[in-house]
Image (tube, helix red, strand yellow):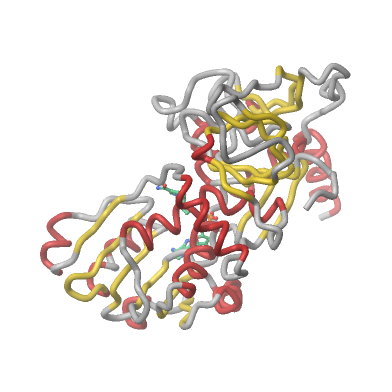
Length: 343
Ligand SMILES: NC(=O)c1ccc[n+]([C@@H]2O[C@H](COP(=O)([O-])OP(=O)(O)OC[C@H]3O[C@@H](n4cnc5c(N)ncnc54)[C@H](OP(=O)(O)O)[C@@H]3O)[C@@H](O)[C@H]2O)c1
């Protein structure tokens, strides 16, 4: 047992990326960032000193305070999105929150000093860094009610939950939704959005997350390890599928005629949809300023609060990614880029 603990400690020390050579330079032209120069395992992520990006005329430069981790970060690092990402060197990270440092001359909505959060595209990520640029439409104001860490988590996961439930399914007051993976990054935010719209929410997660589902607002929490969701949730208007495969297969029958399944991980089968008289959509979420602004307003109104279950330093990116890779994260995990006590 003791030798196992020692081995674990050594592994953690070996994994911790060294930042010795990565201190900020005095002329403010460099930044610390996690850089990937080849696809592969966790060791392809290196903490380096690299040139700070400069904003184009329609972009803002953000001094990052916190970046969120998303499962897609792991897939990108392994090369599964090689055709979509912009090539090497690659700085990962789909979303971040921080303070505007500088703006391009066509930017009208933001100025230096504004607290913001952003959701980047697969083609150009970059949140795992001290600075990142974003187009104006990939940015929204960070509300005072949210910390930078919480706001960073609202980007990709929050926008996905919104685009699935609101823009795609048009979830309305009085309707019923079943949210698979309700304790995860997308799911716990989807529950909150669904409740804010006045829907009744069924949500699935494992035993350890049942209370968490209820805290997020689920009316009915379903333990997928002990019960079949299709025996609990029936005739729902909307299913949000964040799990796929067998979970999607078993979901067709729980949707009432005219209802919809939105999957963010799998493709609903046309024949099954037709047989049940329902619609099905596979959503790949992309940044839209209107959506981020809606999330900002919901956060301001305290109807939408991302839950940060774990926070890691930039140098501990390997441990952070190994957590997100489990597929069993509660809420969100973040990389803390700066220790500044900014809110
Ligand atoms: N298409 C898009 O635009 C888009 C956008 C964002 C995310 N995604 C994808 O959507 C998936 C979910 O993302 P995420 O950020 O929410 O992931 P996450 O933070 O890792 O959360 C996954 C959640 O799923 C739950 N879960 C695992 N197996 C389950 C099962 N059989 N039934 C019900 N719940 C189960 C886990 O809860 P327990 O620990 O309790 O099992 C966990 O809380 C990922 O594959 C991600 O890549 C796609």
